[in-house]
Amino acid sequence: MKKDKIKKHKLLLRHLTLDDYDNIAILMEHVYGNLGGAWKKDQYTSQITRFPEGQIVIEDNGQLVAAALSMVVDYARFGDVHTYAQITSNGYLTHHNPLGDTLYGVDIFVHPKYRGLRLGRRLYDARKELCRNLNLRRFIAGGRIPGYAKYADTLTPVRYIEEVKNREIYDPVLSFQLFNGFHVRKLLTGYLPVDVDSKGFATLLEWVNLDFVDKTPSLGGSKNVIRLGVVQWQMRTLSSVEELLKHAEFFIDAVAGYHADFVLFPEYMSAPLMGLFNDKSPPDAIRALAGFTSEIRNGLLEMAMSYNINIIAGSMPEYSNHELYNVSWLLRRDGTFEAQYKIHVTIDEVSCWGVQGGDALKVFDTDCGKIAVLICYDSEFPELARLATIQGAQIIFVPFWTDTKNAYQRVRYCSHARAIENECFVAITGSVGNLPHAENMDIQYAQAAIFSPSDFSFPHDAILAEATPNTEMTLIADVNLDLLKQVRTRGAARNLANRRPDLYRLEWF
Image (cartoon, rainbow, N blue to C red; front, side, top):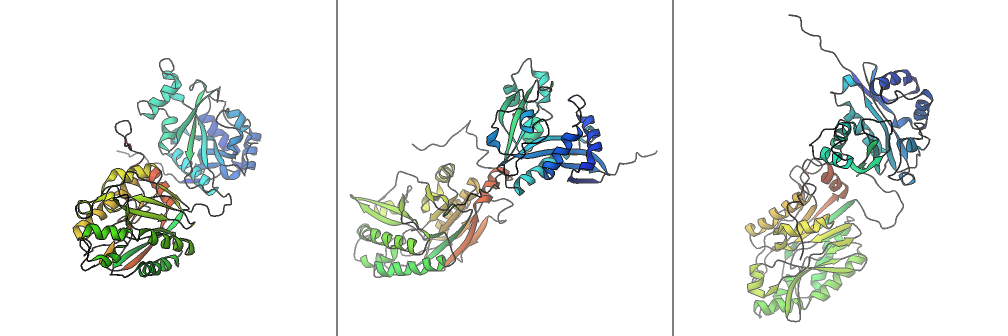
């Protein structure tokens, strides 16, 4: 029995040239026989001449089988209400503007015999790459809805689009565009009047270029790559605030020498001064220690400015109006500061010292984007990190104090989970060593680390850096905020995007 001969393909993606007109006209006649057929030669010549980089074709063994045409426009000039003829200037692309901010999809078509090879997807990927390479804000296209004619008597065009988005109806154009990462920005009326199958309606589709970088010159603007410094702090008995500040300055100086943007210290970083109050009961000792907090904070704030680094001052006790709190300070390098109070206090903090919990979660604005601070036990409550992330936090700092390895592991594994489930970066650090005679603060166990989301753009174990356990040292690591944009929209799993607010929500009372 004779076997059918398998056709051998040789696909090539390239730019169109003026010499391709005759062949591209044949291809368009196959595709658009009922929509006016091919471009006229003078239209095609104008398209190639004005923007050759935007005109792409796929050939198979020399035969043109698929093509995509585009131009760059200043989108604010047209807005969302326009017709195909208006924005493309009747196919001549005279509105093409090399200084524009938007790639506009003029046309895309595939030979009917080649529609099973996903060539349209290749063309869309090529145009997205062009959008990135030209650093354009977005890719906009008007999309036909040729399947609408069958449903026009029973569905409005808006309802039809919703049904296609919900996969209840398959539309040969819109379904394909949604699959390729576009979202429907608006319904257009009279966009392409000759399109009988779409009843004159069209979708205005948008793909947002998350790699877009605003080139507007700025001084002191937000950065995309942030350098974090983390201090694994050795607990040792110190005799004065001045001595503690000198000890802190050593690490701040070292980390700032690597041009870090943040330095993180552990929870209860002022505890080395507890030895001054060994004669007092634990509740009295912690309240006496709180008397140093303002002086330590002010000293560290001076260092934040002089070393040009944002300091997360771990945490320190604060005693005011007969109320004791555990508070972390964000000390900005511009001289401003804010506080985050520990919300969930541990059983020991309550029973031994009488610490009370705070009642507010803050997301701080910094010159490196939005951050949040979860003090130790707070990291073990996923609601807080999720609320912070929803409010825009990209980096979460977790200063902790733990005495045993199993206590440390609770903080570590929960913090690691917070980074993955919220698609953000999380930096943790604690104290090591011993404080003899300091009840409830005498032994320490810690291993500092910086965690990332878990996806292809990040380390295989979602750990950017980690310290040697129980050793005084620093960590330095860069976090790339652009990668967070990518994982949140193009990641293998999209925890934030795939939440079900139709079933549940998280609210702060």
